[in-house]
Length: 198
Image 1 (cartoon, one colour):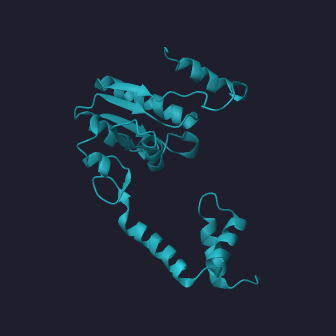
Image 2: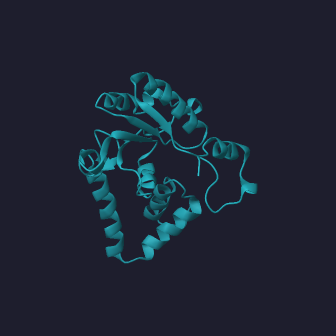
Image 3: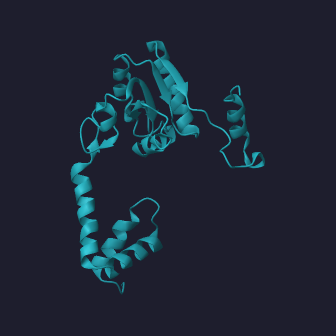
């Protein structure tokens, strides 16, 4: 039998379901919400409800949006001839932070992972292939540099190249500010492979 009220236990259980939140973190958050003013808790509840009602996935690129199509897909300032393929919607933000990419996106909603039962039909690959017919010149594969991301990039390249589109992969290697002695073999291999003339 727990000494906590049932409604508080329920909140802790629900918070634990969030990624990266364990039992102690969930308990700290629940007690913080309990101690905060009622208006603050109501703003949190309203923000979650509002987000769930308004935010959806773009019918073109699968990015998260509150308008359909999203701002990238509907913009005439973006280059619709270049598509950057990413695994998840949060990856779009990472690319946008560079302020260098001017094309549009396609979100796969995951990566190939046979061990987890995720195959090609579980990803948004068919809609990507359908977009290629609309004058796309280049597809940049910006999947994560892990086993699943690499497998996904190789699979997509095999599907896209016969369609006559240029297929490129983001460069990977040693991050700025780190020391070479800490780079593993795969990272060093990718850094050497992606080298360019200076």
